[in-house]
Length: 443
View (cartoon, rainbow, N blue to C red):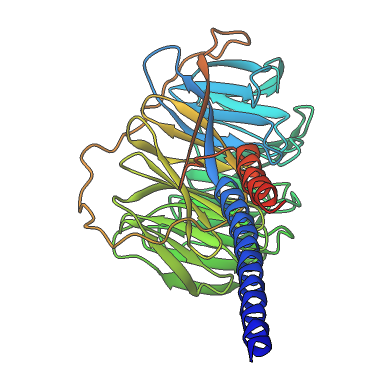
């Protein structure tokens, strides 16, 4: 009898020891799993998209920047307005001058064109004047430069539109309606002008290909597909798509108030529109609505990466929104004052952004991956009028080759949604510490 009692006690003791061992093993496993999950979650937070406020430029005198351009590779920046500004992203190249009202930079960032009175001037990226040409005796009202800088177009107040080649040699000349805006296609085979009478298509020799004189003066914005076969124009409440020969693909009425800006991806599958309705509207290549993102005030400027994966939108109230291709908010920040109309631009890869408010031009770097960190905001009330919208005043002053530089400031400030609370190395160290404690306790 005593034998069986001893055996039973021994069995219970062995069973309890085994259960303790299993519980201890399970405890260790759970701790290891928890540590790994902690590591993954911390690294995930750190890799969320954020904005690094890299630099800020203020005008050297009273005035505002607007109409900024960033080169496709993000290395060069241009801004016009009450003064012209040109700088490299790192600030090694830095120059400017008065009157950037009629001025722009080519997409490669190698040349800048500026119109003063009846003169067209071309500068290299360092500010050295390459040539100056005069178009008649009337002031110029629109200029354009091709992607590589080899084709320059100007139009004056008498209705004349003129082309020049890379060396300033005259090309085609034509008389047309008063031009509001000019754009040159990527292939340089097509020149599109919005005029007081309607939309005009020209060859690179300024021979008219097609004209629409029946629709008035609605169009303000122009974009091309990468192959130059499709032209998107927008203005007032509508968006158009034409072939390069003027054949209509589609037309859409897309807003109740007015379109404030437009930007398109290279394949035109992402057509981004800023609206006075108070939101960002995105259409596909057929003009069908993909999504819209509501803001706290109307959108004054938009930009998009070449593949449509990153979208930037600047609101009137100074808020800069960074969105992904599906309309999810990646990051947001605010400028000091009202964002100027048409004053947002992105590099081709969407990693660098410039935006102008009433007082300064800002440069931002996008950090982290395109992970969604916030959802859309509720639809706001939108002001029916905008009494405080800035209206650029053209300045007719001479642009010297060398001028006083605008005031530039490097700002290593990072903003985002959300801001990362931990450095990734700290996250790894914390996780390693948890694992070390678990192993030590079990030895």
